[in-house]
Image (cartoon, helix red, strand yellow):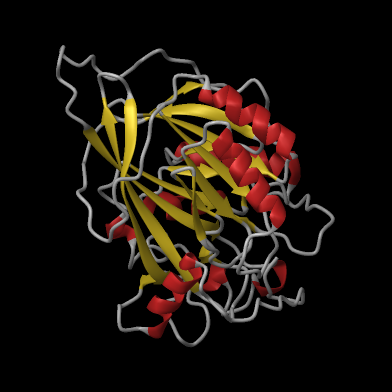
Length: 366
């Protein structure tokens, strides 16, 4: 499929298309937590009239890690996520939901289990929220999440299954760990989405190649990778990203380091090595609250299913709207805020600050 980046800008046209997205096909390989049993569909966009190849525009938004829970030590603390948010499901996205309400898809990494299970894994850091906290994501207009991460299985298969039930109840679609699917948006754009959690590069090569040979118009490779606290990608991230692009990925989405890492354009394909945190309940007073969201505009030419990236808009944010610790409410930064320039430095690879020293004590990042 031909593709080229026409513009990387801070201003773009938005397209609003009504309707319901649907899963068109599911992978042969399953995630560690299991795969959905969804009916396949051969539905496609309406055929274009002969000679009518006017593009249809789509707006996709991408967010970082959404951890809707405290570590166990802080669950009963007045500073913890549960105490601050309570049953106010609108609270975490209260100052940013408007940016995602009218796009065609908002994509995030959901990094916790949504369950009441008490069968915890044998690990130091565990994140679980009640199933009703899926309403936080739907309130924020998040339509799709990746479950490729190191916390969605914190409460085993029961916790994972409960998470899927909670997401389905809110109409939030998902892709599991180490699997892919083809997902059609209203209007006909078919997204191929591969979700990977610390798999071998050979698996990346196989899975992305398989996905590229489906009827997907635009292939997204979503990776949970890298080293926590680092501001630069490591060799493993770079190898996997380049492999995914070489095998047909059109966009690479990265999560896990809890930091904003640089963007690379490799063979005309944007690689976002780490989006950092978006809603992060795991730390009551983080030392780095920098984050951002990406708004991507795509043009689909219906005659030949050719897709172009029209624009990429990187919007600097903080994942806390308070200077007095973490209030779990992301905000868009003002251009005159020093943090605004710092986020752009991180995305550009020019940030000269020291990597975070993450203490794996109570309340710190995991």
